[in-house]
Length: 347
Ligand code: SF4
Image (cartoon, rainbow, N blue to C red; front, side):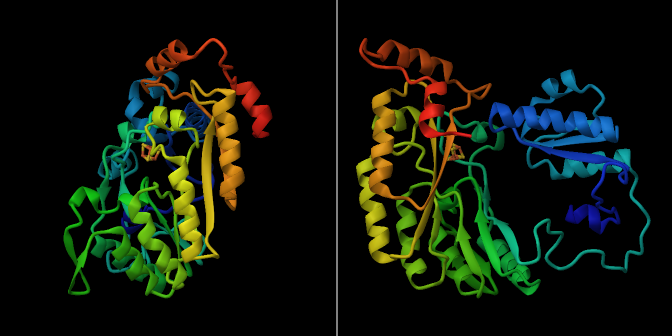
């Protein structure tokens, strides 16, 4: 959007006022796919000139089968391609090249007081319920100097709270083997702790999101105790049953997680922990589900989101389901999604 603004295009809020609509899609779960397809349909109906981009763009054929009249379909991180398509279907407007159309911090869609700071793209994990790695690829960390400079510009623009986001914040720098970069002429290591320290010194609230339970998380807790980071962790644990965690390909030692949470609270008593869980995962029994409830009783997390397992087309979960069904003993009770919904008071 910043580039389009630089070129003189305007961003407007209604279909009616626009010459062209760009639909940024999500393909994370089937319901998100449906929502994306519905939105493309709405944009076509209301405006008619639509370019599709984002994760669902990898399924070009499927989109065109339902919506053959879209002007173009591009995939995730296809910034150049989106720009090319815009240029092709809506020629660049004329504007005075000496007039600066964008602020130093670029175009921001959030209110003035907070901003998202994206530190990496993609993910090296392969959780069996998640299609993100196959859509967005392996982890690619942004250079730390670039991230910190963006944070400085946001601070200068009046931002009070930075929300650090990525698919896996705790893995920051792993892909580049924590190599040295430069920021303000000084060498600086590409890793999560260094990033948090430097952000914490900028005088904004810094909130960490989407932290995988890696050991590196432990190093950020003292920074929270010192007031450099907000005492807040958004850390999806997903389940507590070792069997289900193993099937999800997630770290499986729920007991150890409880110990870690206790240690975090010892170091930073005011820490607020938010987490999310999936129920109704293929093979989950009443026993597994009860294990999760018992774990939550002990963990006493501050905020909990609970999602019904949603199958994702393209994931190799069916073989997993078959494997589980074979393994289920006669007296196991298969927890139906409907049953779980009642139990967890979902939705
Ligand atoms: S860590 Fe998160 S983004 Fe990565 S595969 Fe697992 S659920 Fe998906």
